[in-house]
Image 1 (spheres, rainbow, N blue to C red):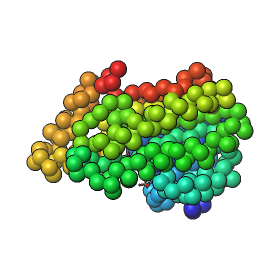
Image 2: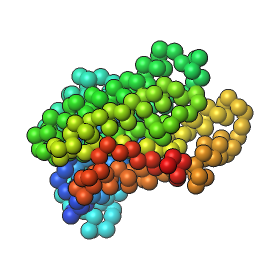
Image 3: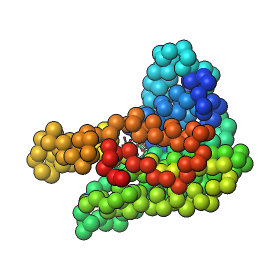
Length: 280
Ligand code: NAP
């Protein structure tokens, strides 16, 4: 772990003032949009991922976005980062302990780190299967186990698991990813019941195809395998969305930020699709 960036101003008077949020996969895509949304609500945010240089760059960009904002958006919070590989319990325990040492117990955990591999089921070997489970499901399990004692001690917590519409329905050629994301939703529901009287909510946010590196990779894959143009490939991915567009990262982030609000305390065990009406 490298030392992070501390003392960066963020929102004053937000409803998450003083709460420490730990966002896995916070260096890019949906995770960095979530970090931004939580900072705007006054949270202190630790970004976590495997690549220190990316985390550091994103922390700097988020910090300057906030300091460039209207003065009503600035206060006295911090953004920081730690490196972590969520597939390793040891790495997760060390990263959360370091984050808590720097900024206090974690009140908000966003399990966003994920990977999406595609392959026909017949070609889905142990490597793809294990990798999808390790990152998407084991990673979520490891992080919750590390953060939960602090939330229980505080009597308050928000756990938001970024699953996918692939956790709510099936899609061809992504069976391992679908199985892992269905697992994340099962874990969300079960844990929500266990923690229902403890002041801790557990929810899943389920994006449809969202404009990030995951979609860039999917477009490249379609182009390489089918010979279609990039535009056709993107249109193909957007076609399943009734709004006929890719979801934007900040649309996912807004749902996460709302679930983290004190006023969302009756929302638990839910899976919110952010997918233009694809799932209802
Ligand atoms: P992305 O741009 O590829 O970002 C994935 C993030 O996860 C990166 O920050 C990456 O950082 C981190 N990560 C990957 N493996 C990790 C590991 N072993 N340990 C720690 N961090 C790891 O993807 P995204 O689209 O923003 O996806 C974010 C989440 O949304 C994922 O859970 C994904 O399944 C879900 N989702 C995405 C879509 C979509 O269409 N984009 C749709 C539904 C659900 P490092 O590589 O630096 O570790």
